[in-house]
Length: 203
Image: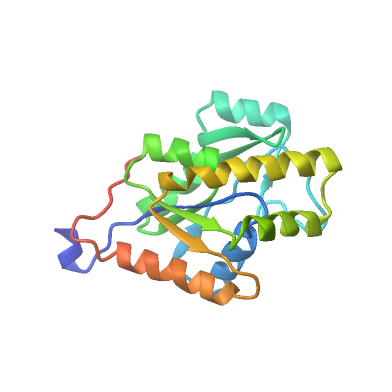
């Protein structure tokens, strides 16, 4: 087996969870660790927010361009999320895995369900708040949504919390404990690389 020759099977890693749980912050911190993995940049049709960078935070594309990406099979998965489309560029993932690097996807719970169905060998990690009340407070503190969209996000987050059984692991992202959250995720990834029966993903 390759594993005993010093080579590791690259992983397709999904980090998901409800809106407001801190997925972006956690993955940004993981990037600063200088890890030998590729953080896939999601394509989206939603407007670019202040402080966000095209190509780093998201690939901001038009509705027409997104439809073109769907038609050409350029997306690993895509979904309508809070009235905007999001999708995972297939080529980014393929290049990472082919080069032997883990590919890390930041997607919503709906997208994670699609990945689980299409690629059962993917590693799915659910990022969760300590309490539902804490999650609602985080969403309200962001002040980036209209009242109607905030209400939609809160409702959706509550429904997403019910899908935790879809995932392989749950990691609690507690306020003020970002480093501990990242450490736990990395420990999971290290353990997965030492499985006697490695996960297999073929795109």
